[in-house]
Length: 539
Image (tube, rainbow, N blue to C red; front, top):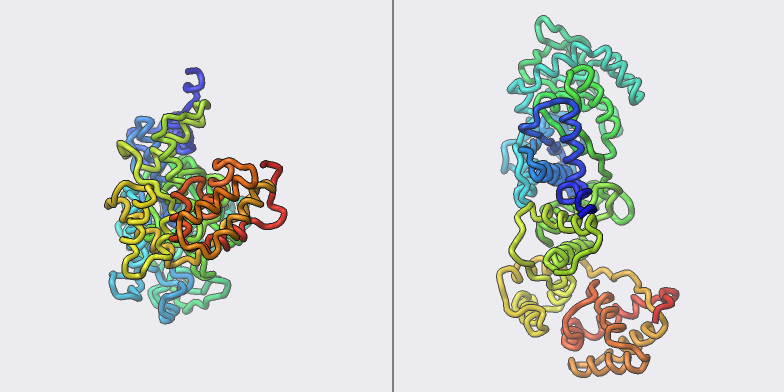
C-alpha cells in the first residue's frame, strides 16, 4: 500500500505532466475550473507522423487532467495564416508563384477545398478525427480577422523595442531590434514575409511597412518595393513566431503546450514575452524530439521518407499509433512503414498484459503499464481483449495468397491453424491491414538472432531439411528430428523459429505454416538470421 501512494494518477508520464501543470496553476493562484491545453496544426505541408504527435500527446495530457478531476479542453490552432515557404513534393509547380503568400489565401491546387490551407488542414484533421482526438479547432487567419489577438498584438508592438532587445539577448537574433515582430500582407503583391514593419502608430492602430524581401527556404526572396500602411484590426497581418505563441497563450488561456526540440529558442522567447509583456505566466511545457527514419534523418516529404498518419491507418490500428505517442516523450524516435508490425505487436502485448491475471510485483511499473493501455484506449477500455493474431503472420499469408482471394485464404488458414475460432469483422479488418502492408512493403528481414551453438545447429538442419518438402507432416518430422538430435526441448527451439519468421515467440503449428509460406522462403529467412558471430553462451 505504501508504494501505491506514490503512483500519480494512472502512473504514466501524462499524469506527471498533468500534476505538474495543476501544481503550477495553484502556485500562480489561477482559476482551474477549465485547464486548456494547446497544439499547433501546420497548414503549409503534407501532415506526417510528427504533425499529429503534438496533438495526440496534448490530448493525452487533457485526459490525464480529467483523470485528476479537472475539466480540460484541447485547442487545435491551425497556422493557416503562415506563408508558403516552398512547393511540397507532389504538388503542382505553379504554386511557386504563391511563395510567401498566406496559405489560407492560396487556391487549392487539387480543386476540392476553398484554399491550399483548407486542403492540407483537412488531411490533418481527418487523421485526428480517425484517431479519436477531440479538439476545438481555431483557424489562425480567422483569429486575426476576428480580432481575437488584437489586444496582445498591440501590447507586443507597443513594447517592440524591449522585445527586440530581449530576443537578441536570449537567442542572438538582432533583426527585431530594427524590425517589429509583425508582418502585414503587402497590399501590392499579396505576400506576407517580404514585408518589414518599421513603425507602429498606437493612436491610429496602424503599422507602416515596406516590402523589402526576406530570406526564405535558403534563398533571398525579393520584395516588390511597395510601402504602405496596414490597420491591425483589419486582420491583414500576423505576429512573427518569436512572439505569436505568447499572444495565443494569453488570448486563449492556455495552461499546457508541448513543443518539439527545434522550437526551443522560439519557446524561450515566447515564455519571456508572455510573462513580462503580456502579463500572462506562460503554460507549463513538455519538450519532445522529432521523429526520424532509420538513417536518423528528420521525416520529410522532400527526402522521400514521409509516413503520413493516413498511411499508418491504412496499415494499422489507431491504437498502435496512439501507443507510439504515449509510450514515452523523451528521446528521438525512429519510425518507418517497415516497422508497423512492431508497433502493432507492441499494442497486442500491452493489451495481453492488461487483461492478464499476472501482474508486475512492482506497483509503479504495473500502474504505468495499465495506465498506458487505458490512455491508449482514450479511457474507453473494452470488456475483454481483442484478436491478437501476429501481424507478420497475417502479412506473410497475404503475400502468398491468390490475388483474387486474399481474405478467404488468410482467414481459412488462421482457422485451420487454431489461431482463431472463426471469421469475424475484427479479423477481417486485421487481414485488410496486413494485406495492404504486405503489398506495399518488400518483406524486411528481421535482425539476426542470438542463439547458442546447439540451437544454431538445429536451426540450420531444419532450414536445409525442409527445402523442397511438400507436406506439413514432413516439416514437423524434420523439426523434431533437428531438436532431438541436438538434445533440445521444444521450448528451446520453436520460440526461436517463430521469432525469426514472425517476430514473436508464438505462432501457429509450424508444419502447415511452413507449407503455406513456402519452405524456400522459410529456409532463406532462417539462414539469413544465423549470421556468423551471432551466437551466445546459452544452450
